[in-house]
Length: 231
Figure 1 (cartoon, helix red, strand yellow):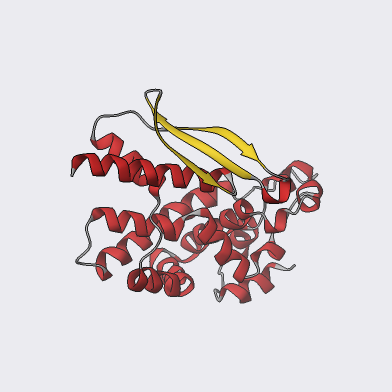
Figure 2 (cartoon, helix red, strand yellow; figure 1 turned 135 degrees about the vertical axis):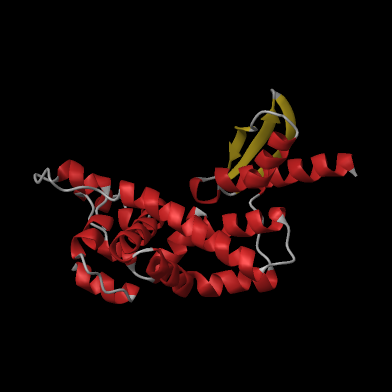
């Protein structure tokens, strides 16, 4: 798909179209391309991630004046996590704009959450480089505005892994470790059990349909138990 079509979907008119084109280049395309001058979107993704985090933090700070650091952190984490960004990119149709290598395309790369989240962040980086922070901020708030409003009004699922890590650091403990202890069931309905430990000592276990979900459940359980001990 032509970058101009993606530009229309984004609602942004680039001054330097080369920035948008670079934001759409996945690393697999470079590996298979004979044109060595092509640069991928990893650096733009890095920049876009920083701009996104700042904009969301700034917006939540301004619009949630009664909330403390914990709620603000959990809300921001939920808004900028991979699943949220991938869903946003999917809604914009960015998967069809990606420039992928043949192998990555054949493996369903246009709908992989990581690729979608990465390209969305890279585009934010491209907008920032092209037109500055104010325009990048307006772009982010236009695209993510409904999600931010929903998070403010109805709450959002906390990022327990991040909150557990912060809790342990505040108590001078090392980072938690996650270990898969079991996986049962057929491939289409597998159930994973994960254990979270600190200093080799088990804190809690979690069960889920993916390792990531099981880790989140384990983290939430551990955090709840640790806080209960302090009450």
